[in-house]
Image (cartoon, rainbow, N blue to C red; front, side, top):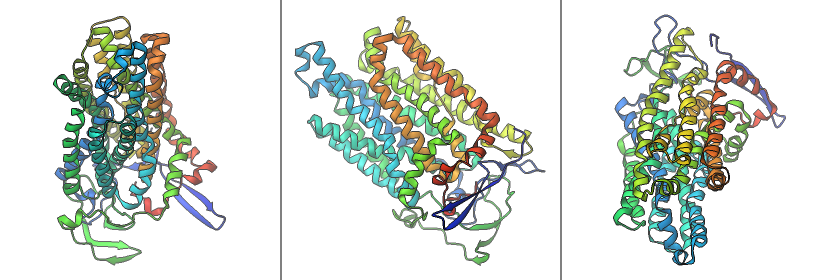
Length: 540
């Protein structure tokens, strides 16, 4: 990794009329001062008091907390009610228990569509929302989609029709997916490069804890109440998050089309960056804007942030998958999170058949996932930042995104081990702690690496990763149980473990050759559909 950053100009002819020159370093930056060895703030903050990079650490971490709570709730209703899938099936198909096992199985299979379609729309729906997020800002889409989310939660608590309930779950997934995809972009808006790994680990933990917390709370609710009380409780929780978003969550996107007269080697001292009180735009001095008032910061519409069309951004999300770094990141998201879907779609049936667990007892086992997620914040996020900084120091202060990848070794061990423990525990009827430990072990840092490489289009990167993850999880939710019935738990989950190991092990060649691979792939003809406008640049 001892190499200088490669800056390779790319010229692309658009419509045969104009030549656009894009200069890219694929995330390679000077991150520590050559002489003092102090961390350099990346991106460079402006002197504008409204720049999110200039917010206090307290405000930044509050924003991260709101984002993580929103992510928790997105998966709370997406997966949590699966604990009560049998009771839900009997409610919509009351004749099934009287008609025998075949009718019961058919009823449960139809009820499963409530959850599989939600999971699918959470990922695919991001492709619709993200162009609006990039063009009109994060805040209006957060508020709009969470309002829709609350509305569908109320809808689902009241409707008794199967078709209406299925439609409500589809709309809910479509809305919830927007917030899930916006979170990594909002984190990248607010936090510097050296802070991003830990905060992204918090985001990943919130997603996992949403599934686990939803399962635990849903299971506890069903001890003494009908399954619909899950949605009654969720109305209050989702409503609270929407209230906080409305009155405490300002816009995080910031137009960095101008630069400030600030030392580019400004060290991270924990204080506001030093700069002269002037802003330079088109080589002329302009007055700095005034700090927005509380109500001004909460405006739903704050302007247009890119001249790119919605179609250009949508097409970019589709084409990005051909780039090796993006493809690897999407595959890692698919196998680590997708295989969690394979576990959660089977866990209620497996624990009931193997250990005789009631739904609430199975839900309580997901405390293991919460503990594992908390550990993952330190092992995946903090460790990733530490490893990258250690390698940056050894490389004379030059930082490459690939320097995060050695931390993947944690996932390389825990993800296959988790799947093997779960499969072997159920297959051989081992103590219930064996498969429960398997539920706990999973973490990955692939998304933050890919965002580091292509930071200006972090939104489209997230959409591509989330969409592939959801498609993979959707397929697994249908085929996991038939696969297990055919080959058994140990064979099915052993195969998943081997696939996960192979995909994660690809981080080794990517660590060695990643920068060269990214530079070479940027010369491919299809990349003309990936190139972004100058107004998307963020200083990385």
